[in-house]
Amino acid sequence: MLLQFWGATKTVTGSLHYVEAVGKRFILDCGLYQGHRDEAESRNRKIPIKHIEGLDYLFLSHAHIDHSGNIPTLVKSGFAGKIITTSATADLISIMLYDSAHIQMKDIEYVNRRRKRKGLPPKEPLYSKEDVDKALKCLEPVQYGEWFDVSEKLRVVFFDAGHILGSAVILIEIKENGRTKRLLFTGDLGRKALPIIRNPYQVSPVNFLITESTYGGRYHRPYKEVSRILENLIDKTVKRKGKIIIPAFSVGRTQEIVYEIQKIHERNELPDIPLFVDSPLSVNVTEVFKKHPECFDKETLQIIENHDNPFGFKRLTYIRDVEESKELNNIKESCIIISASGMCEAGRILHHLKNSIEDERNIILIVGYQAQGTLGRNLVEKKKIVRIFGEEYNRRADVIVLNEFSSHGDRGDLLDYVRRSDAEKIFCVHGDVDQIEQFAQGIKEFHRENVHIPERGDVFEL
Image 1 (cartoon, rainbow, N blue to C red):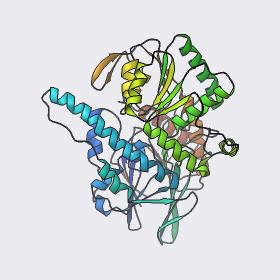
Image 2: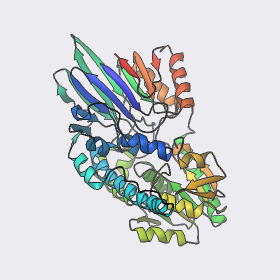
Image 3: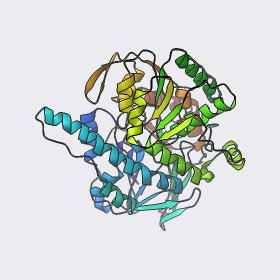
Image 4: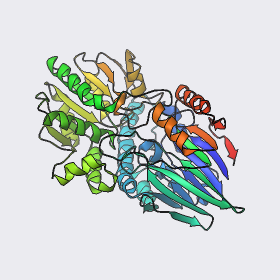
């Protein structure tokens, strides 16, 4: 078996790993790289896999854009194999990739207007809706726990990763020379006791493990503290007549925030403040959530069985129309606006940040990991001047980071999962350098010396 690492190496975006085994060639994930605009464009436009047209499969862990978002480019480059993923993930990317194509078209139009004023040639979007059409024809959904036979010597099964709706750890079982070897890819691994979705499924034993490392050096505060912290932030903002702007992934994070604010409302502890989810994608994704109760935990299933909607209440308005979105910037009273993208790299959130960032009454609430080079990371680092659509803005709004909302496991969760997997050889990916190195050292401390931190393009023979 051969492994080659092309994405999410010493960074948290652009997940892409290549595997050869028993005469088959496939990849794990095909995500967009998110970071500095020029570097991201260079990486995303050219997928470095040789002979893409000869790939048999793409096994997709989940729907987040940094894991799935470059699939249309893969198909444009000649991929004609099957995309195997869970049923919920298939439903999600069927709307997310169209949204990604739409956002790229709109953003490139905005950028090209500025380039034209400067006498520069126009740029093309990474892919179009027609490219998404072709990509979706390759989808072949599977259910959790059901083996997918690639050949007599190779089979694959997906188990719940507890990260977002439909997310999976992917187990690949290979028979060769009378022996069976097991390779496990965690994708993004979730936390125990998160709302809405089920806990991560522990797979053991495995021979080889590719594990994410996003919070490999950090611990989260208990999730149970989230609701009270959020309530206090809302109270603070209302008193100073400000707004709360929340960049959030349309899948998972948006629904979790709505869920928690609804619980505050049900306790009669929510001030008189409207909540807007300004993202057509988030609206569509919430509908997909309702279709997949097989992914829900017991608490959420009980709410649904009681005929309650865990993703909607009377203070909440979902915004689809672009004109309605623009009107939100004219609201003078306090409100909460949740909008995508989660790392502030594209979409409507950029317009809300542009219109809110220089007002000291406002709060920008960061509820997810922000990759290096993104606007979201610049906000987390509380830089005084940030660039939005290429223009400089003075950041006067408060920036509050609530990692408790993260759907990634923390250091304790990740170390426990690796320990229980009983893997012989471990590859740490999907983490910034400091986090990934601390995580690898933590693994070695419980007597797992065979730990690797791949560089981009590194090859390993197993």
